[in-house]
Image (cartoon, rainbow, N blue to C red; front, side, top):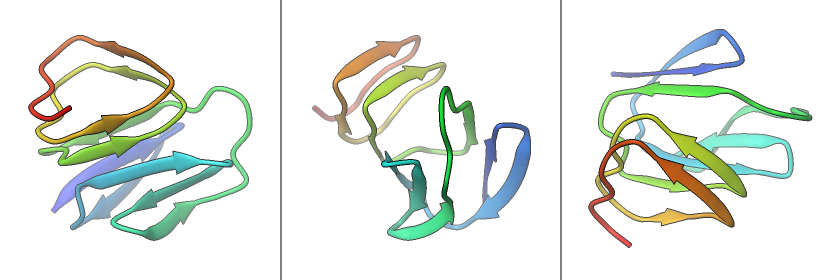
Length: 80
């Protein structure tokens, strides 16, 4: 199990592909949170396979691909 914390609310998930679009956060295609506005803080504990979002700050590593408009990484990206 991986742990994802969204604006202080913790969820336990088995997936590791995160998508953040149009105020929705999806993990492996399933909607986890929706209706989010403004700055959203996400903390993911586990191996992150891929990440898709508009503006992202990553404090850790992503083992797969990252698709976003603005990105700041303090770790490694294993994909593109």
